[in-house]
Image 1 (cartoon, rainbow, N blue to C red):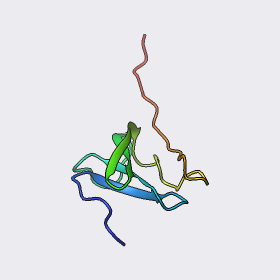
Image 2: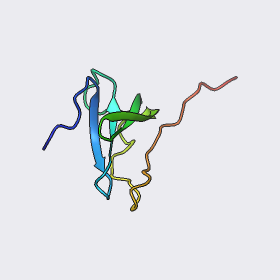
Image 3: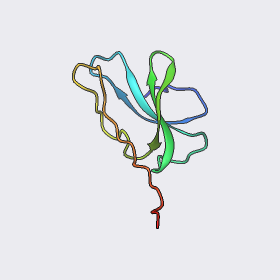
Image 4: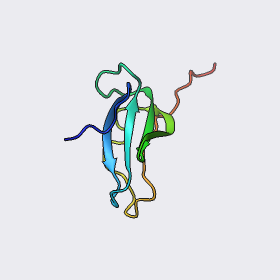
Length: 88
């Protein structure tokens, strides 16, 4: 094992692209314990320094399995739906 990130965020689930050139991972806000659901999280790319690709509602389940395309050009992820109170 080797640590890949060195920031205050709580980083989980690194997924290496099939070509070995990129790594995407799920980044939780600082102080998050574990890898819970229902938070605003970031998907970050390690290339070579971390950069945020997207901020989204998610958490546990967003990228649990490696979901890179075979050509390493795309990856899939899950964003949680927004929940709005019903209007009466």
